[in-house]
Amino acid sequence: MPEALQQVRDDLGEQAVILNTRTLRRNNRFNLADEARVEVTAAYDEAPAVQSAGPARLAARKYGAQLPASAPEEPMAPQRQTAPPAPAVQPVQPVPPAPPASGDEGGVARQLRRLQDTVARLERKSGVALPDELARLRERLASVGLAADLGDQVVGQLLEAMSGKALADRRQVGESAAAALIQLLPPSKRIKLAARRQVIGFFGASGVGKTTAAAKIAAGFTRKRKDHIVLVTTDDQRVGARDQVDTFARIIGVPLEVAHGEEEMREVLARHEAARLVLIDAPGCGPHDHKTLGHQARLFAAAGVDEVHVVIDALHGLDHMLDMLEASRDLPERRLLFAKMDEMVRPGPVLSAAIDSQIPTSYLAVGARVPGDIEVGNLNKLVEQIVGYGPKKKQ
Image (cartoon, rainbow, N blue to C red; front, top):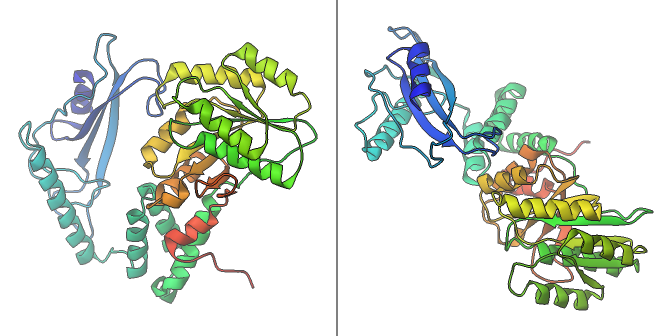
C-alpha cells in the first residue's frame, strides 16, 4: 500500500484525491497473478481554476502494487490524504472533495451525496441532462439490476442513433433499447443429439438446482425420443443427494450410475457405450473451492464431456454470477443454464451475466416440476420484460 500511494504522490502530486483502496486476492477475475495485490484509485481535477461554460472533467487513474508474501489478504482500511476543496465538477464517479478524518465513514457517504447533488444541478444549468425518455430508460435499467456500464452503453447508443422527436417517443426509445440489448446477447444453444454420443456436465454452487435441471433435460429427451439416456451422479458431499437423483431417475425411467473417481467414470461410460446422451450431475462447488473444482475438472476430462452447463441461480447478484463464470473458465465448451427463473425479482443480473460472458444460454428452469418447467434459453423475452417493449418488427 505505501508503494502504491507513493506512486500517486509522484505522478499526481500532493493535491490528488484518494477515491478508494482495496486488496485484490490472488487468482480471481480482477487479479490473475499468483500474488495478492493492492489497488489505489486516485483522481485530480484537470479543469482550470476559473470554470468556463460546461462541467469540468475529472481524471482518475488506478495504481497497483504487489503485496509481500507475508502480507495478509484481508481488505485493508482505506488510507486517505487531505486535499483542499475543489470546485464543483462532473466526475466519472463520485469523489469526496475533502476526505474526512479516519473512521468517519458516514462523512464520506454524506460528502458523496452532496457532490452528486452538485453535479446534478450543474448538468441542469449547462443543458447536458439526458432527454426525459432516455433518463427514464436509464433509471429503469438500473432499477432491475442491469450492470451500470451496460445501461450507459445502451443509452449512449440511442443518444447517437436517435434525434428530435424520436427521443421523446417512449415506444421508439423502448424498441430501440430492446434491439440494442438483443444485439449484445450471445445466441441460445440447447442440447442437440448427434450421430455420436453426447456427454454433458453440470457445474454450479450448492443448491442452485443442478440435479433438477439435469433431470428436466433427461425427461424432455425421453418424452420426445426413445434414445438411451443415462444419468450419472458424482455427488458424495450433500446429504440426501443420492436419494434425490435416484427418485428423479425412477420418475423419468432412465438408468442411474454413480462415479466418484476418474476410473469409475471411465467404467460407467464403457458400460453405456450405446447411450445417446449422458448427463453428469456434479456436486456443488463454490467459486473459490479450488480443490473441488479441480476434482470436477478431472472427472469431466475422464468422461470426455462435450459441453459443461454452468447452472446459475437467477436469484443471485451479478458479482456472484461472474465469480462462478470465472471459476469455470477452464471447463470445456460452456453453456449458461439459469435456474429459479420463476422466483426471480430483478432480471438485470441474468441479462448482464449473459452479455458480459458472451456464453450461449442453453435452458431456463422456470419451476420445480419434473418432467416440465424448463424452456430453451432465449433471453429476448427477458429484454422485453426489462424494457417494456420488444424490438420493432421489420415490415
